[in-house]
Each structure stands twice: as structure tokens, then as C-alpha cells.
Length: 249
Image (cartoon, rainbow, N blue to C red; front, top):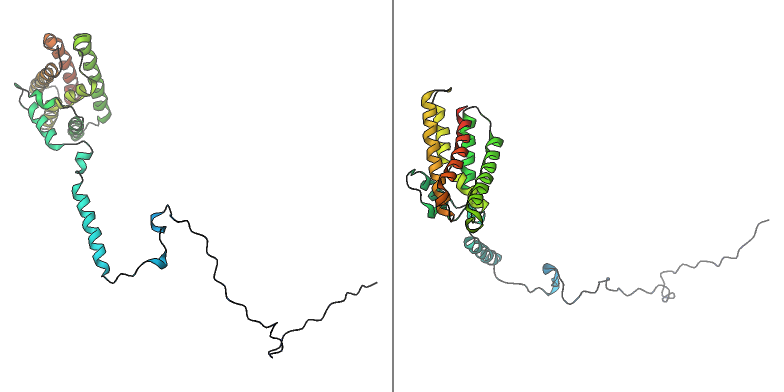
């Protein structure tokens, strides 16, 4: 059994004027625009595009002004090495003070740094590498252990009243006084390998040089070290004799 539904007829408007109410044209409306806050937190979105005044001047004028201000700000900045704490003049001044084995300038080493010791460490490793010895980790480990050893020895000898030598200064002194051993490592490239007498004699000269420089700096930089000069010199001699054995063997 089928059920019938009554559907009203559909009347399409014609082009005539009788159906004016049906064929009435809609009034165009403005598109939806979200409400903007009075002040935006984003700098480049804080203005309305339509409210930007048109400038009649050339575009290049503003670019040149900003470029000039940018170049001025770059000129006022410090060099990159100074920002990293690396001062080549200071490193050369401290290294040059070690070159005189009889008189070491202790005032140059009052401001301790690790840039010069790292440079000497890399030079020592490079000369050892040219001699066919890959000892980067060994040398670095011995430098750290030697600095801690000398720091403990001096503070135990000096006691509470005069033990004012910090580990940073001790590491700086041990690193800079490694310069004679680095020179010996470079000179050993031109000496025949093996246990020859000139090789041992040359090693002894450079070890005494490094020991004397390190002892003078330790005594001059720390208080109360003059009375323990002999024991400090013995500890320094053991340290640089150990480094010289890397070059000989």
C-alpha cells in the first residue's frame, strides 16, 4: 500500500518585473574581520597595513641608514678572541718569560690562564705525532695528574696559613713550564732514535730548565714557598722527567 504526500508546487521567478520581491538583489556585506587588540605583542603585527603612510623618499635611504647603524654596532663589539678569553699578546709574554732559564718573570704569571698551556699541549702532541707517537690522551692525562699532584704537595708543605695556591694557577704554571720539554720534543726529531748518550744529556738539560722555571714561579706566586724550595723542586723534577721519558722512548 503506497502513501501519497502532498507536495506544494515550486514556482521559479521569471525575468519580469512582477516578481520583484522574489528576485530582490542582496546587499553586499563586508567580509568578516576579527577584532584586533589595541596593542599587539608582536612588533611587526602591531600596525594596520591600510594605515601605513606612503613615503615619497627613495627606498635605499632607509636601507643605507640601517646598514650604517648595523656596521657601527659591529665596530663597537670586542674581538672574538677577547670574548673567548684568549689573549695572544699575554700568551706570548708569558711564554717569552720562560725562555730565560736563569731569571723567570713571575709578575707575568700572576694572572693565570689555560689558553697558553693548551697551545703548548697541542704543540707537544704534534711533535710527538711527527715522531710516530700518538700520545694525545697520555699527555693530557699526565698534565692533569701533575697539576693535582703539585697542588696537593705544595698545600701540604705550606699548611693552612700559606696554602693559598689554587688549582687553576698550578695548572697554568705546569703548562707554561712545559715549554722546554716541547722544544726538546721538536729537537729530538733531528736526533737519531735510541738510547744514545747525547740524547739523555740533552733531555737532562731541558728537564733542569723546566724544573728551575716551575720552582721559581711556584715560590714567587705563593706565600711561604721559599722555605720549601727544595721539596717543590723535587716534585717539579719528577713531573718534567716523566714528560721527557715520552720523548726519549
